[in-house]
Image (tube, rainbow, N blue to C red; front, side, top):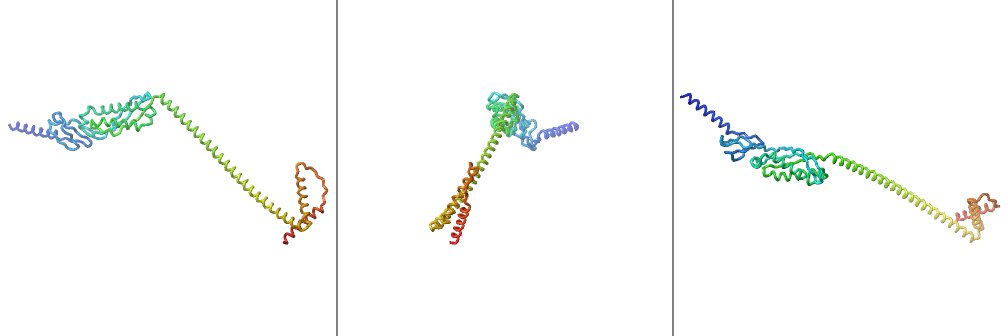
Length: 305
Protein backbone atom coordinates (compact mmCIF):
# COMPACT_ATOMS: atom_id res chain seq x y z
CA UNK A 1 0.00 0.00 0.00
CA UNK A 2 2.75 2.38 0.93
CA UNK A 3 4.66 1.39 -2.19
CA UNK A 4 1.76 2.41 -4.40
CA UNK A 5 1.45 5.70 -2.56
CA UNK A 6 5.13 6.44 -3.02
CA UNK A 7 4.88 5.75 -6.72
CA UNK A 8 1.87 8.02 -7.03
CA UNK A 9 3.63 10.83 -5.20
CA UNK A 10 6.70 10.38 -7.32
CA UNK A 11 4.57 10.54 -10.46
CA UNK A 12 2.94 13.71 -9.25
CA UNK A 13 6.34 15.25 -8.56
CA UNK A 14 7.62 14.29 -12.00
CA UNK A 15 4.44 15.63 -13.59
CA UNK A 16 4.78 18.90 -11.68
CA UNK A 17 8.38 19.25 -12.80
CA UNK A 18 7.40 18.57 -16.42
CA UNK A 19 4.55 21.11 -16.21
CA UNK A 20 6.88 23.75 -14.77
CA UNK A 21 9.43 23.07 -17.48
CA UNK A 22 6.80 23.24 -20.20
CA UNK A 23 5.22 26.40 -18.78
CA UNK A 24 8.45 28.43 -18.61
CA UNK A 25 9.78 29.91 -21.86
CA UNK A 26 12.84 32.09 -22.30
CA UNK A 27 12.69 34.44 -25.29
CA UNK A 28 16.17 35.71 -26.34
CA UNK A 29 16.87 39.34 -27.12
CA UNK A 30 16.18 40.25 -30.73
CA UNK A 31 13.49 37.61 -31.14
CA UNK A 32 9.76 37.33 -30.56
CA UNK A 33 7.59 34.22 -30.30
CA UNK A 34 3.97 33.92 -31.38
CA UNK A 35 1.75 32.05 -28.91
CA UNK A 36 -1.10 29.82 -30.11
CA UNK A 37 -3.88 28.37 -28.00
CA UNK A 38 -5.53 25.36 -29.56
CA UNK A 39 -3.96 26.41 -32.87
CA UNK A 40 -5.20 30.01 -32.76
CA UNK A 41 -2.87 33.00 -32.32
CA UNK A 42 -3.42 34.80 -29.03
CA UNK A 43 -0.45 37.12 -28.44
CA UNK A 44 3.30 37.61 -28.90
CA UNK A 45 5.93 36.76 -26.32
CA UNK A 46 8.54 39.52 -25.91
CA UNK A 47 12.19 38.88 -24.93
CA UNK A 48 12.64 37.64 -21.36
CA UNK A 49 11.21 34.95 -19.06
CA UNK A 50 7.62 34.09 -20.07
CA UNK A 51 4.99 31.60 -18.80
CA UNK A 52 2.44 29.65 -20.81
CA UNK A 53 -0.20 27.03 -20.04
CA UNK A 54 1.26 23.62 -20.86
CA UNK A 55 -0.62 21.36 -23.26
CA UNK A 56 -2.98 24.24 -24.09
CA UNK A 57 -0.64 26.96 -25.28
CA UNK A 58 2.20 26.33 -27.71
CA UNK A 59 4.83 28.38 -29.54
CA UNK A 60 3.75 29.13 -33.11
CA UNK A 61 6.73 30.86 -34.81
CA UNK A 62 10.03 32.14 -33.58
CA UNK A 63 10.59 35.42 -35.43
CA UNK A 64 13.98 37.15 -35.72
CA UNK A 65 13.32 40.87 -35.13
CA UNK A 66 16.84 42.03 -35.99
CA UNK A 67 17.78 43.47 -39.38
CA UNK A 68 18.54 40.68 -41.80
CA UNK A 69 20.24 40.39 -45.17
CA UNK A 70 18.71 38.58 -48.13
CA UNK A 71 20.95 37.88 -51.11
CA UNK A 72 19.29 38.24 -54.52
CA UNK A 73 20.95 35.91 -57.01
CA UNK A 74 22.07 36.86 -60.50
CA UNK A 75 19.28 36.99 -63.06
CA UNK A 76 18.83 38.13 -66.65
CA UNK A 77 16.91 41.29 -67.44
CA UNK A 78 16.18 43.13 -70.68
CA UNK A 79 16.66 46.89 -70.85
CA UNK A 80 14.44 49.36 -72.71
CA UNK A 81 16.79 49.29 -75.70
CA UNK A 82 16.70 45.44 -75.79
CA UNK A 83 20.08 44.78 -74.20
CA UNK A 84 20.29 41.63 -72.07
CA UNK A 85 22.12 42.21 -68.78
CA UNK A 86 22.93 40.14 -65.70
CA UNK A 87 21.78 41.78 -62.45
CA UNK A 88 22.14 40.76 -58.81
CA UNK A 89 21.58 42.55 -55.52
CA UNK A 90 21.07 42.43 -51.78
CA UNK A 91 18.08 43.33 -49.56
CA UNK A 92 18.22 44.58 -45.96
CA UNK A 93 14.97 44.14 -44.05
CA UNK A 94 13.60 43.97 -40.51
CA UNK A 95 10.46 42.40 -39.04
CA UNK A 96 8.36 44.93 -37.14
CA UNK A 97 5.36 42.74 -36.33
CA UNK A 98 5.98 39.08 -35.47
CA UNK A 99 2.35 38.07 -35.91
CA UNK A 100 2.01 39.61 -39.39
CA UNK A 101 5.36 38.18 -40.48
CA UNK A 102 4.14 34.75 -39.34
CA UNK A 103 0.53 34.65 -40.52
CA UNK A 104 0.17 37.18 -43.37
CA UNK A 105 2.57 35.44 -45.74
CA UNK A 106 3.78 31.91 -46.20
CA UNK A 107 7.58 31.61 -46.41
CA UNK A 108 8.56 35.23 -45.87
CA UNK A 109 12.07 34.92 -47.30
CA UNK A 110 10.89 33.32 -50.51
CA UNK A 111 8.13 35.93 -50.98
CA UNK A 112 10.49 38.85 -50.35
CA UNK A 113 13.12 37.40 -52.70
CA UNK A 114 10.67 36.96 -55.58
CA UNK A 115 9.15 40.40 -55.00
CA UNK A 116 12.60 41.99 -55.22
CA UNK A 117 13.63 40.05 -58.32
CA UNK A 118 10.42 40.98 -60.12
CA UNK A 119 10.87 44.67 -59.41
CA UNK A 120 14.53 44.57 -60.46
CA UNK A 121 13.44 43.26 -63.86
CA UNK A 122 10.67 45.88 -64.04
CA UNK A 123 12.96 48.81 -63.30
CA UNK A 124 15.64 47.44 -65.63
CA UNK A 125 13.13 47.19 -68.48
CA UNK A 126 12.12 50.84 -68.04
CA UNK A 127 15.64 52.22 -68.60
CA UNK A 128 18.18 52.28 -71.42
CA UNK A 129 21.51 50.53 -70.89
CA UNK A 130 23.40 53.82 -70.46
CA UNK A 131 20.88 55.00 -67.86
CA UNK A 132 21.04 51.64 -66.10
CA UNK A 133 24.82 51.80 -65.76
CA UNK A 134 24.97 55.44 -64.68
CA UNK A 135 21.93 55.76 -62.37
CA UNK A 136 22.55 53.10 -59.73
CA UNK A 137 21.14 55.22 -56.90
CA UNK A 138 17.92 55.87 -58.80
CA UNK A 139 17.49 52.14 -59.49
CA UNK A 140 18.00 51.29 -55.81
CA UNK A 141 15.50 53.94 -54.72
CA UNK A 142 12.79 52.91 -57.17
CA UNK A 143 13.05 49.22 -56.20
CA UNK A 144 13.09 50.08 -52.50
CA UNK A 145 9.92 52.17 -52.71
CA UNK A 146 7.91 49.43 -54.45
CA UNK A 147 9.18 46.50 -52.36
CA UNK A 148 8.84 48.30 -49.02
CA UNK A 149 5.28 49.36 -49.85
CA UNK A 150 4.31 45.74 -50.60
CA UNK A 151 6.16 44.32 -47.58
CA UNK A 152 4.27 46.55 -45.11
CA UNK A 153 1.35 44.14 -45.23
CA UNK A 154 3.68 41.41 -43.98
CA UNK A 155 4.91 43.42 -40.99
CA UNK A 156 8.29 43.93 -42.70
CA UNK A 157 10.28 47.10 -43.21
CA UNK A 158 12.76 47.03 -46.10
CA UNK A 159 15.55 49.40 -45.08
CA UNK A 160 17.85 49.19 -48.12
CA UNK A 161 18.08 47.50 -51.50
CA UNK A 162 21.40 47.60 -53.31
CA UNK A 163 22.06 46.42 -56.85
CA UNK A 164 25.50 44.85 -56.56
CA UNK A 165 26.43 44.26 -60.17
CA UNK A 166 25.09 44.94 -63.66
CA UNK A 167 26.92 42.95 -66.35
CA UNK A 168 26.21 43.68 -70.04
CA UNK A 169 27.06 41.07 -72.71
CA UNK A 170 30.63 40.77 -74.00
CA UNK A 171 29.96 42.42 -77.37
CA UNK A 172 28.37 45.43 -75.65
CA UNK A 173 31.33 45.68 -73.27
CA UNK A 174 33.72 45.72 -76.24
CA UNK A 175 31.65 48.42 -77.97
CA UNK A 176 31.62 50.46 -74.75
CA UNK A 177 35.39 50.10 -74.47
CA UNK A 178 35.84 51.37 -78.03
CA UNK A 179 33.49 54.25 -77.34
CA UNK A 180 35.39 55.13 -74.15
CA UNK A 181 38.70 55.03 -76.04
CA UNK A 182 37.30 57.29 -78.76
CA UNK A 183 36.00 59.73 -76.15
CA UNK A 184 39.39 59.86 -74.45
CA UNK A 185 41.15 60.47 -77.76
CA UNK A 186 38.61 63.18 -78.56
CA UNK A 187 39.22 64.89 -75.23
CA UNK A 188 42.98 64.64 -75.76
CA UNK A 189 42.65 66.22 -79.21
CA UNK A 190 40.49 69.00 -77.82
CA UNK A 191 42.95 69.68 -75.02
CA UNK A 192 45.85 69.74 -77.47
CA UNK A 193 43.97 72.16 -79.75
CA UNK A 194 43.14 74.38 -76.79
CA UNK A 195 46.80 74.35 -75.78
CA UNK A 196 47.90 75.37 -79.29
CA UNK A 197 45.27 78.09 -79.37
CA UNK A 198 46.35 79.40 -75.96
CA UNK A 199 49.97 79.40 -77.13
CA UNK A 200 49.07 81.33 -80.29
CA UNK A 201 47.05 83.82 -78.29
CA UNK A 202 49.93 84.38 -75.87
CA UNK A 203 52.39 84.72 -78.75
CA UNK A 204 50.10 87.24 -80.49
CA UNK A 205 49.69 89.13 -77.24
CA UNK A 206 53.46 89.23 -76.87
CA UNK A 207 53.95 90.50 -80.42
CA UNK A 208 51.22 93.07 -79.88
CA UNK A 209 52.86 94.27 -76.68
CA UNK A 210 56.23 94.45 -78.44
CA UNK A 211 54.73 96.49 -81.27
CA UNK A 212 53.08 98.82 -78.76
CA UNK A 213 56.36 99.32 -76.93
CA UNK A 214 58.19 99.87 -80.22
CA UNK A 215 55.56 102.41 -81.33
CA UNK A 216 55.81 104.15 -77.99
CA UNK A 217 59.58 104.27 -78.40
CA UNK A 218 59.29 105.73 -81.90
CA UNK A 219 56.76 108.26 -80.60
CA UNK A 220 59.10 109.29 -77.79
CA UNK A 221 62.02 109.56 -80.25
CA UNK A 222 59.90 111.59 -82.65
CA UNK A 223 58.90 113.91 -79.82
CA UNK A 224 62.52 114.36 -78.81
CA UNK A 225 63.51 114.97 -82.45
CA UNK A 226 60.73 117.51 -82.86
CA UNK A 227 61.85 119.29 -79.70
CA UNK A 228 65.43 119.36 -81.03
CA UNK A 229 64.31 120.74 -84.38
CA UNK A 230 62.17 123.30 -82.60
CA UNK A 231 65.11 124.44 -80.50
CA UNK A 232 67.36 124.54 -83.58
CA UNK A 233 64.75 126.61 -85.42
CA UNK A 234 64.52 128.94 -82.46
CA UNK A 235 68.31 129.28 -82.42
CA UNK A 236 68.40 129.96 -86.16
CA UNK A 237 65.60 132.50 -85.78
CA UNK A 238 67.53 134.30 -83.06
CA UNK A 239 70.66 134.24 -85.20
CA UNK A 240 68.76 135.55 -88.22
CA UNK A 241 67.28 138.28 -86.08
CA UNK A 242 70.73 139.27 -84.86
CA UNK A 243 72.12 139.29 -88.40
CA UNK A 244 69.17 141.25 -89.70
CA UNK A 245 69.66 143.87 -87.00
CA UNK A 246 73.36 144.03 -87.84
CA UNK A 247 72.63 144.46 -91.57
CA UNK A 248 70.15 147.19 -90.78
CA UNK A 249 72.92 148.96 -88.90
CA UNK A 250 75.26 148.60 -91.90
CA UNK A 251 77.58 145.98 -90.41
CA UNK A 252 79.47 144.26 -93.26
CA UNK A 253 80.21 141.20 -91.11
CA UNK A 254 76.51 140.26 -91.18
CA UNK A 255 76.56 140.17 -94.99
CA UNK A 256 79.66 138.00 -94.90
CA UNK A 257 77.87 135.64 -92.46
CA UNK A 258 75.02 135.03 -94.89
CA UNK A 259 77.38 134.50 -97.78
CA UNK A 260 79.61 132.11 -95.81
CA UNK A 261 76.62 130.17 -94.51
CA UNK A 262 75.16 129.65 -97.98
CA UNK A 263 78.60 128.81 -99.32
CA UNK A 264 79.29 126.12 -96.72
CA UNK A 265 75.84 124.56 -97.16
CA UNK A 266 76.32 124.41 -100.92
CA UNK A 267 79.68 122.69 -100.49
CA UNK A 268 78.13 120.17 -98.09
CA UNK A 269 75.34 119.35 -100.56
CA UNK A 270 77.85 118.86 -103.39
CA UNK A 271 80.10 116.67 -101.26
CA UNK A 272 77.23 114.44 -100.04
CA UNK A 273 75.60 113.99 -103.46
CA UNK A 274 75.34 110.38 -104.70
CA UNK A 275 76.63 111.31 -108.20
CA UNK A 276 79.53 113.41 -106.98
CA UNK A 277 82.88 111.89 -107.71
CA UNK A 278 85.48 114.67 -107.91
CA UNK A 279 84.84 118.43 -107.89
CA UNK A 280 87.42 121.16 -108.82
CA UNK A 281 86.43 124.56 -107.53
CA UNK A 282 88.39 127.76 -106.98
CA UNK A 283 88.14 128.61 -103.34
CA UNK A 284 89.17 131.85 -101.80
CA UNK A 285 90.17 130.80 -98.38
CA UNK A 286 90.74 134.28 -97.09
CA UNK A 287 87.16 135.24 -97.94
CA UNK A 288 85.70 132.30 -96.04
CA UNK A 289 88.02 132.91 -93.08
CA UNK A 290 87.08 136.55 -93.10
CA UNK A 291 83.40 135.63 -93.08
CA UNK A 292 83.98 133.33 -90.10
CA UNK A 293 85.81 136.15 -88.35
CA UNK A 294 82.85 138.40 -89.02
CA UNK A 295 80.57 135.83 -87.40
CA UNK A 296 82.81 135.81 -84.34
CA UNK A 297 82.56 139.61 -84.10
CA UNK A 298 78.78 139.42 -84.32
CA UNK A 299 78.67 136.90 -81.48
CA UNK A 300 80.93 139.06 -79.32
CA UNK A 301 78.75 142.13 -79.96
CA UNK A 302 75.60 140.17 -79.12
CA UNK A 303 77.21 138.88 -75.94
CA UNK A 304 78.31 142.38 -74.88
CA UNK A 305 74.74 143.61 -75.19
